Length: 461
Image (cartoon, one colour):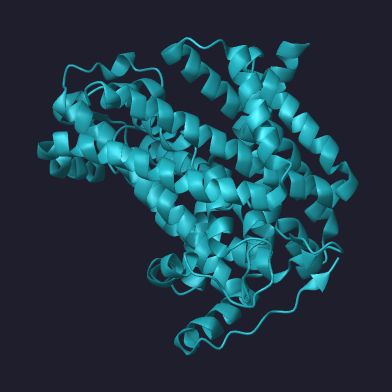
């Protein structure tokens, strides 16, 4: 019976994450880039400075930086390390370029979905801010049934892709490198998670504000050290990545291009999985930000995709490709997953290389557990009310505790499938409300230097 269920879910997963979904997501990225007049230029020049500033007098639960780091906590995960390696192993070095381009264009979609999340957010009776695709669908398009579907998919996906698979990765790394029994790891992670998530969004964002910058800088410094060691191969690697993104062929170090179809498929798929632009998850955190204007927070939120994919994934890709070119003895045909490839790269740093990678995976995975706990809470509360939050948190903690000792293949498949299904109602909201978004964006950008923002009215739930 279990095998039958596994086969059914695997078939559905292959359909929902097939070419139609990839084309839909990538197409939305390109459309929103055009619709917003290439908002990426303002995301970088204005969004990054705004992310570290406070918005005086604005309503919200956490700072703009707190909302951004909470979203980044859930977004920057093992996909940035293992996912990029998998893309290279299956699609060739050219996959790195497609992954990077997905991040560049994905910033526009992340901007748009954050905009509608803040635009249509509501305030609960006890003063908490709630928003996301479900509220945009209900209040902006009067399609509550689609909002319910989104909340259902996202809420239950949180247990798998946000919790169980991440804790399992931590347990595997700790057992392999330190000999710690998986059951102990599960208990420790469950206790740490309970301490944080029972404090609500303030507690989660407080931890994320400290953890995310540390783990990102720690990992990027490791990548920079490796690139410094491989400096002779950086320019050749960039040329190879660009060349093999569009055609098959062999390169230095045994690198082989699989053609534009494979490079594009795996690069785009890994990029989408890494930055989550279009899935509608990160805007749930954006809705809690202290901001007067949805465009302002949308600019801040869009920088998340920049840091996640345009910077971190690109760094990982360059590290892996230069390492392979520098060490032609690496047998790519024997590499079965991205984790092996990344491990080979970090072993170049004497003694501390594996430590950097191990701590990076642990921090990235644990931060994802915290970020997705908040996403799940908001979605479950939308479905069943505030009273069920305690039950949700208890179940989430129990899942974290048992994750290292259960088989997760089916759990991963179900959660990954739910992730894809989340994207459908979210993209409907993004595309249908793009006209309103474009109008408000144009107005905000025009008056950006005047600093004459006014608090957008917030509806009480």
